[in-house]
Length: 421
Image 1 (spheres, rainbow, N blue to C red):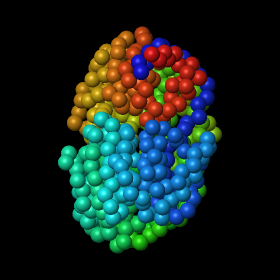
Image 2: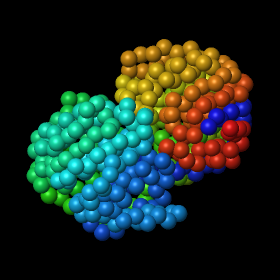
Image 3: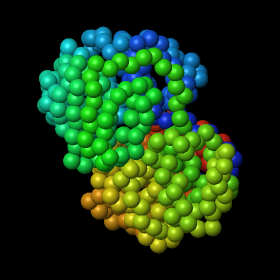
């Protein structure tokens, strides 16, 4: 799909949809649980639905209602799916699900789309091998197969992505023996906080060091059926937030819970470093802004926010440095390189760092950019087009549905001038 975005003035109110991170963790917990679990207000996006389909293949019974999903679990004993599990574009689903699949005593195979086939899996698969699993992964990425059972023991985890540790934390409590996991470093620590919040709610026991680099996890634990509300997604909220700053005339954002452990809530602190004014109440209000000013932001805890913060920086006066975020290079795309490449097409000067991006604010002119089939790149440039002086065209914009299926409709209701061809 080709999306043409014209200069727009946004106003009104927007309700943020459920968190992708929470929804995927809820599906996997429910798959492993004993009895019927209920997820209220889950996110129904391409990534979460791929994970839900995988849970069905592995033996979960799933009934979907408009406001909730009811999932009857397997007590941790999966059904052999009898086919390759297609995770489509879901890196989170793939990594977290592979951990609980490594507990099974039969072979389970995974694959995905072209983007997912670029996502690193080798170090996580090596962790499973250290714990007794057999792995067939010729490229260290999809497609690959795992045959367990992992029974517990000592292993190391790669801290380059928090998802590697989260996979082990979700699976090892269900292993037969106790386990120890050690890391040398850990990026994206708040995402591990989302995982441990689920473990706490599910009654799973663990010990961790203060620096989160050493974990002790008793085995033979069980997950009982549960009922849980899925919190709104701060990663999603970042898009109407920045849109309100650069093209808004007063926007309200609803459903946000700042007590939730999601790391991307820091984006609301980051925009204040740009000089933005926001009002935090029952609903968050973004008043019309006079100007934004360049600043330096450490994005190690919030790598998913790099594309949209790069757009904010493009409209800020002066220079902005987005730093300490090397893991942004191993997402659906190399987001540092892609944002530098695509911003250059519309007149914005940037400089790549090994672990970040420097953006020189300026005037964004007309042009055509490509999403590289990365949902956050597509949505970031759709927001950019709202404040550009001339129309901006985004190729392959339909990938926004990976995490935010209501993106186009929600923004149109705020006044966005979107034309889809």
